[in-house]
Image 1 (cartoon, rainbow, N blue to C red):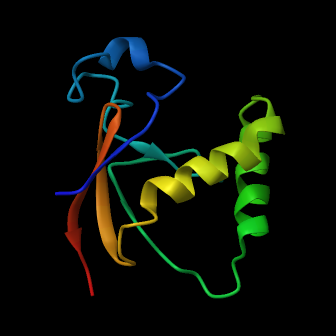
Image 2: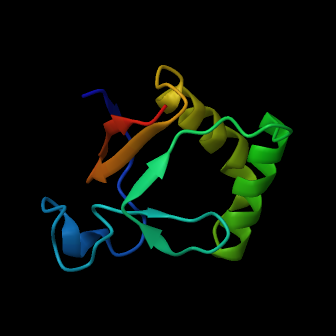
Length: 107
């Protein structure tokens, strides 16, 4: 399994600190950029027509919707691109606290 490191979720992490299976769920989930709903897996995708600038804009919009400072969107986008750069398109990933692990690759 390939692993990546990420920061713990900003909100509610205290309940899941040290236990990804804690009652909160934020230690094992990702939040949708627009829906803000939790999911336990994500897929690495290459979406035709979706540019790096589009990704930064999506992150900026998500941060604004959540009441966070959108000034860090470009930096966050760069960090996330670095995290997945060696993972193939189709990689299914899951989160365990501050690690993101490739569960499987769908071809």
